[in-house]
Image (cartoon, rainbow, N blue to C red; front, side, top):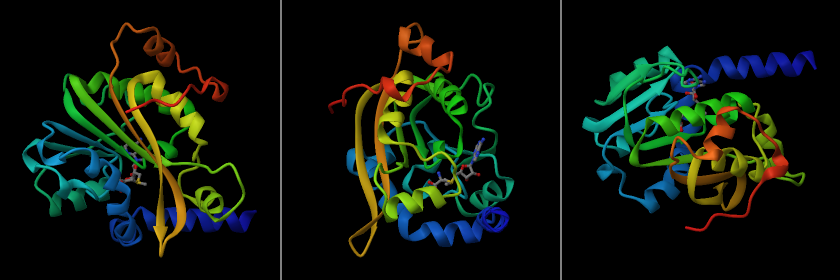
Length: 232
Ligand SMILES: C[S@@+](CC[C@H](N)C(=O)[O-])C[C@H]1O[C@@H](n2cnc3c(N)ncnc32)[C@H](O)[C@@H]1O
């Protein structure tokens, strides 16, 4: 157990350096973003917020003039500023005051929420909904905990983020905060072998006074409340 904790802590320290993170992510970054790129031309989406942008992993896909990346890790943001022209800000994405007064047309939340406990996810999503412009859209990509034993479940459990969730739990969390457009599962593969199970959720701003938003801001959560699949 102590050996596992030490190994996890060494892994986390290494991943917090921009170079190690980029080397590890490089083969998968485009696979992860492919469902979003297949859905919309991201160079024409207006004001973009890339929440928990890492060292700017996905910044090059967007128009730098309308792109804002936020991350809590100073080294990642320094690295991103050195490589890309967009606006990069060090901030805690779970803070209610983050980017106060700003509105975005397109918010990307890629591989971030599985680092947060359920209450923090619920509060962050309420904030993301506030940051969306009236016609804005949010795209969330994240890690699914597969129901059955196997390689994908082992890898999800081994991830730096401690909160890979069953897909029904993700759906429940996301549909509390946004008007769902669709939620689609996909896999990251190597040589055709699925290694990580992911989902792509697309949602629209939910009106402030909707009962679901009120419930969400109370941050209550039950995986038993998973609703029926949304259609595109
Ligand atoms: C798995 S990485 C994903 C990075 C990037 N979105 C990507 O797709 O490669 C998770 C990111 O979340 C950031 N992060 C963790 N907690 C955060 C917080 N409270 N506020 C902002 N960023 C945070 C980490 O620094 C890291 O860059």
